[in-house]
Image (tube, rainbow, N blue to C red; front, side):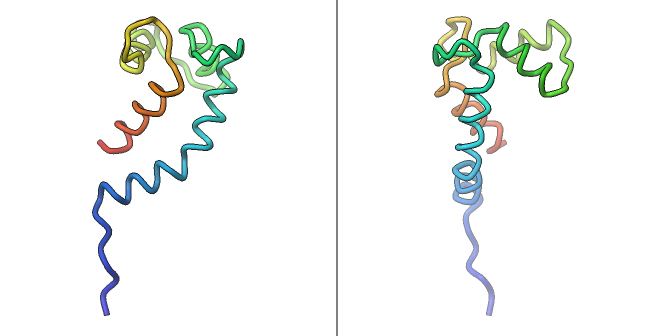
Length: 89
């Protein structure tokens, strides 16, 4: 007997749901001033603390990709929405 197949989108959503708590925790750790937003400076520091190095121009591009409303900062909602888009690619 063959196990039922789960549609790919449904599987990815389940996996994202499992990661969401950890993603929120990571966001809150990087949001050092606890204003609910990650500034470019906080993001850069978070990436450095994670042991990653990203060149300045590449870093700016990453921030722009996650800053949906173009206010120069990343909200938790923007962060989660964009991570979810990346998971689905």
